[in-house]
Image (tube, rainbow, N blue to C red; front, side, top):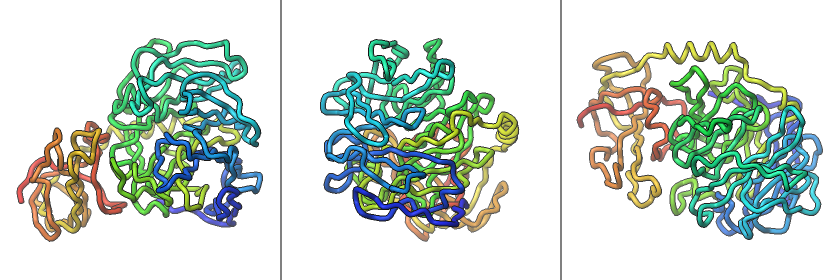
Length: 459
């Protein structure tokens, strides 16, 4: 559905691996940009959460012709790298001594900034001061929770201010709006939402991870869904929200993706993928050498990804990207476009149909322990539509989500075999906002097929 427009190929030499990279669309069709990320050199390339000491801090500049390069090439702990708003420095965290550091994008010696874990870097639009937002771990980093969110000026470590203590938060993403009054995050995981840092209150937007905030003051935000394939988008006045598939790059082939983070430009974001190796917890935890850095460009109406740019091409694990685009500080999401989108979302009907189906492909019901820390999971099967008994449905194939595990217990009713026929009443999954962050098991790389949720039915 979303095709990358290719013309002149931009080819870079990956300093760290000697392999070709960034060879998708022409650099001329994109603004000048920079990207930083961590590259995993451990066996198996599975350090998806950047918790180990076998990482290199990497960078790519679309204008310098160097391709992928190591900023800090000695393997170590370089967790969650973040570009400063001017794109000139990289802020990262070390799990060795729970401290925050910075280094020039061009390289050189790293400088220790403060104790803690870095969450975001923000520039005051009035006085241009650059602030690093950081927090402290609750127990060990594997607790996946932080507290005492505060900020310090990058050029003045004595200027510490506490900005959020109302809840604990999760470390995957915490991102501020242009004014610095709002921040998207998990409060904590899996409750994604938006916090008002001036009032100390927050609004829950959905269940999921990697909540992100538009870098202007439009109030647009997202929460990444449980299947790790779609952004659940929200905006003031559009409480029903809308979904944007982000596993549509040709190399992803419908598989799971991870680490989505809005850049400093409203139109662009970064993520990693594809994930197709089963790991100790789920597919994401499998990581693997196929995981690369990709940049996506939103369509003007914010309803799809209109183009992709592949940054890396190597046999290592590339995780936690952050991107900076020249001119991003003046970019805004069109208010008129949001108004039109709000009207379209409000007019969207609830689609419920009763259909006779034949299972074309079935997903497995996993062991309950394999989905931890989730306690429940939806299992998605692919069906051919044999007939429509009630309602309207034009598609010849649909996906249907069944509860495969509820409260740690497998549900036999979700076990379907290929060739089996069923009559089901289903509704568009889009209307079930409460399910968007639930873990989903989808064994096939099924793209472009509408997803439904089973309301009732029989085999």
